[in-house]
Length: 162
Image (tube, rainbow, N blue to C red; front, side):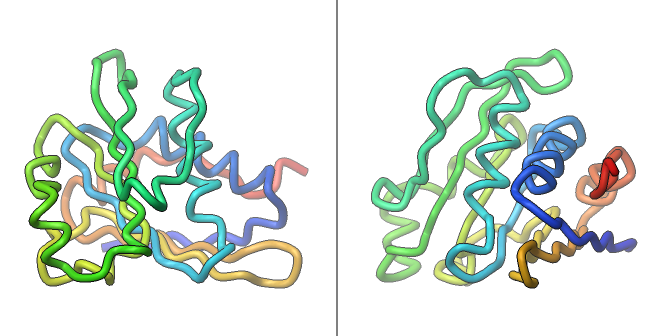
C-alpha cells in the first residue's frame, strides 16, 4: 500500500492537513496518531473535526480518555470519537470503559497514544506518524486496509501553498 510523506512547515500546514483528511475520511475508519508530546496530534485532530463543520470547542480528551463529536461526513451524519490514551494505566482500562463498542461502521475513531492499548485496540485503517523537525514537523500516512488506502486516494493536500 502506498504511503504519503509530507513536511509541515508550520501550524497552518498542520491545520490544512487536518482539513484535507476531514474530506477524505469515512465512517468506520480507525486512525492511529503516533508522535511525541507536542508533535501535533491534537492540533491535527482539532483541525479535522472543525473542518467537518463542528462549531464547538474541541478539547484534548487527556483526562476523559474519549470525546465524541457529532459531525457530517460526505453529507451523512456521523460521529468522530477522539481518544487520548496517554493517561491510561492499562489496556484493561480501555476494555472496562466499553470503548471497543465505539469502533464500528458508523464512527470514525481517532486514537492518540494507541500503543497504550495496542493489545485490545482494533487495527488502524490509517496510521499517522508525526515527528518534530526544526520549526515544523514531518508526517507519514500509512494505510493498512482498503478503507485506509481509499482515504489516501481521496486525499488532496499540498503542504505548501506558497
